[in-house]
Image (cartoon, rainbow, N blue to C red):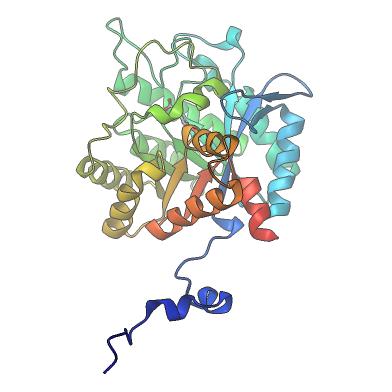
Length: 329
Ligand code: PBG
């Protein structure tokens, strides 16, 4: 008998057609959600230094990106406003203005490209002078219940403007159920909630805070509301709560460093799970490419496939358009 192996896993890998035949997961443009930053300035594209290749777009640019998403087969866009400084306040009241930048962007997109989904971030940080996601008391603590009341109103304003999915990213307790009730009562039964259920207090959000203009304003961290990176069991508890309160889908954030959480959530709950490959992860790939440490196309497709393998229904990624172009080619 030969001492060489008869069982050879390499057999199925020997040719391209066979590798395709044996692939356990596929990645398509339909798996992507494209986060976009909005500026109130007219007719400009503002590059973001810490997020090379990503810009803030004025409303006409946002609409152009919407058409691009449609043409590339990207089903959904996520919007984040860079609120002008003079409209920011302690209580983030601009978040409730039905004519704020976010609502104007939602309406512009839904008018021009109604077939692309619009997901909106529910949280106060792009509107506050302190950069926190909620109201801050005299001791500097982000208060839960009064913040949740405002988030409910913010979500309603976004739904009125035409948002298809509201995505609370604030990590206040109980807000999913409150938002669900308000949407039902307000005639928005078909507006979905994607909760940022397991959102960690992460060092990977830096470039995003530059993009929405909150980095310089934020004087402390968000550890009293976002989760400790040491915790996994707690993520399951957060997900269970948000599902019980009426979330249609849940998100894990950041992405790659938390694929264990994605896999656990998917296996435990059997619900649609999304991951956010956040700004710092994007910047890390671009930095690697810039020093010749790796090939952008390969890094992008490999990381996105890893999300699918872990169990994601889709991924929010700043590489969405680039990836869709690669996948469509
Ligand atoms: C804030 C929010 C953040 C992100 C999405 N929504 C930043 C934060 O929590 O400070 C981060 C996304 C990214 O880094 O790409 N509500």
